[in-house]
Length: 294
Image (cartoon, rainbow, N blue to C red):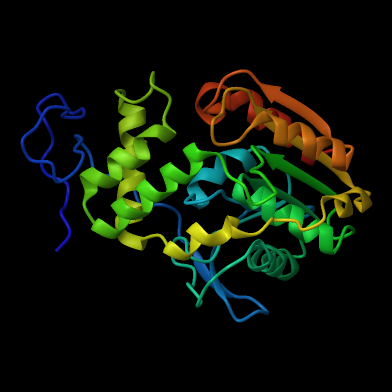
């Protein structure tokens, strides 16, 4: 049986020094997320999906590797129209079809969700930015506007830090131990947030979600081949694109954001500090919504 979080410490905050290493603890249980649904795509894969808002335009939001719907919702909080958030295969309650998987498979998931929703706009984070690039390379006229947030490398070669982090996360999820998962997830938080109620709440939520839903090991093989075999195909895109990168991000090299912006003739903004959702959330939300609402 997997370990559960224990009783709250006296001060209601994280108990950093403890003998029992079954998992993080806080004064309150995490709140349940919004109700999602399982949607069957044309490919036969079922994905977990959440729809908010109403009317046009319709925008689909796709998360990064080991991410989830809750991680992309802040990016769409000020976007007009209907917003469709979903979990890629191997994440959350979405199906885990037999592997190995490629970015072509992720592009199929993204296309399936967009087609069902009638989406004309899309936002992709990290891994999903690669899937979105693959989709645009195959059908450059599929979207009118696209946003790439912290795009991952497209050439199949990942930074060592990214490989180590994923290996550690997969091993921790496989163990089922909350403490191991917490240690693996903690680098997602900037140092200034890690020992705060907000940071601790985020950590608990991520740990509980990964304990409950798991994470497919097939994801480790995605970068065995380039996300886009021929990057020059992206030049055929005639819509509007926004690329958001960040300096000193060891997982998402700023050079790839610059490279992608050049290929797409896109608007480009580079943030100065990593963990943008924590350090520059308001500006990030405003840039995304201003671009997509135009």
